[in-house]
Image 1: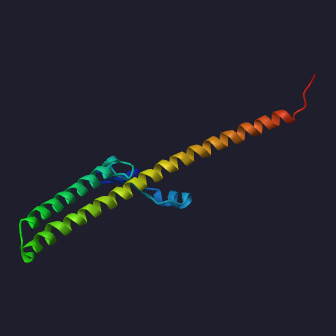
Image 2: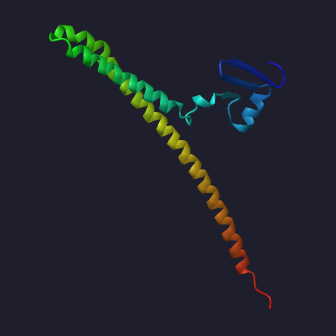
Image 3: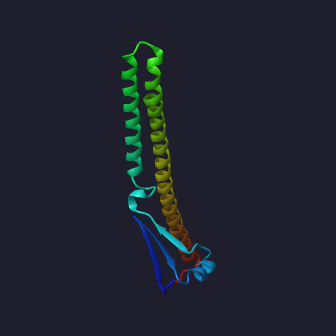
Length: 144
């Protein structure tokens, strides 16, 4: 590896390794590889919500296609291929869409909750410092 940073790029992903990373990683107790993902791929991006909606809508369309094809047939053995090919696959796509929507919204909520907790910790620390200063000022005797 050369001095400084060595970069390997694959599509939108960038992996960086520092030349002195093992020593720094051992001291800091962290990994020596930083992986950056594109902004649309992160958990906080609304892309996943839209992907789940599209997948769910495709599933509902397949269910509607299966229903339309099955309703035109009066014999069960002719209905079965439509139910199996479009109906069950459509139901599976709806379930996958709902699962992706659930996971992505929970991840976004967790990130927002983490930001709120960090802000609350900052405010509490500021309040503690202000109270300490106020108590220190009140405990000093006043001169007349």
